[in-house]
Length: 406
Image (cartoon, rainbow, N blue to C red; front, side):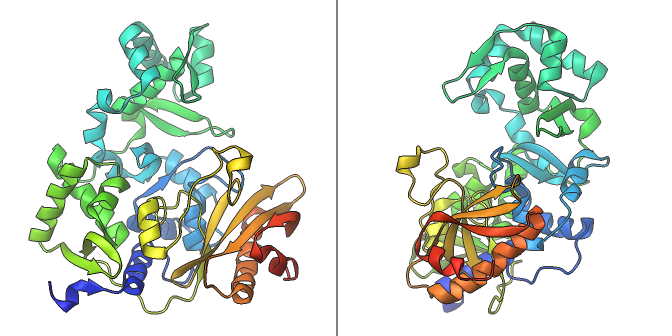
């Protein structure tokens, strides 16, 4: 391995940020073209139902584009011809149309990826599954409650993970998992609206691979492009692909000179760089990142690249939380310099800061100033009047931010 195949940690971070569209200034205007440009880079937006600040799939676009009309996302996912579709990728995700079709290998293996309630309903109630499909064919798109109301009383099935679906909801999710049903949009309460996939999903772009190996290779290349530099585990994790097959795809991409093996200072695992991604010079911008941002949702990679140990804590009881309920890392330049616990209190028009901490060896005063500006921008996008530091706010940045102009 030559010196050209060795990267400093700073070079690797800048490659990662460039790959994710976080190295360039935010555009001055945002429309569907800018949305498509971000999706060309990152390929997916992970969906999560918790809405403490904003829906998780909307925030990565804000981090890259700045204030933008949320309706752009809703339109792209609900108006024909759709440019974004929901599917299981890195968990439930909004993806580009080509990525939706490249995930066909997963929809072909439902027994491997379905969980208890879905398996039970397709095994025990195939009649109900057929009824649900027929109802959607006649009256879709419909939400799960509408389907249940039309089909009458049903058992509810728990799965040990907190889900307590009706049988018709489990049938809908089974049909979604196997690709007979797709999500046509979301209701105002964020409920999925289901319809026949043939009425929702645009046809695959020409030349897209139809076989499993070809789909996994294409997804591995997309994951590598979205990472800039990454390990095989990181690449497999992006679209939740089998590791062994991801490794085979990597070997083919190296042979075709799409990827090149590299070493990164302090990162003692095999790594691969996508040759189509160019690193950046000094990065002069900031961004708050939701926990499900594709830059950071692989926690091992996050720690290796940025030195930040980050855990999602809102599933933990309050006494076990270290940093808070809804914590967002703060990117400044090419480093993650702080983390903040936030809540959008829409009733009072406030963005409440419940905790703020600098990472080790970061200048508290300078970080506080940059963070205060970013919190102000976020509040404006959320339609809130002001940022307020809670009286009980924890962390070394809280005092600094109280004295800042928020």
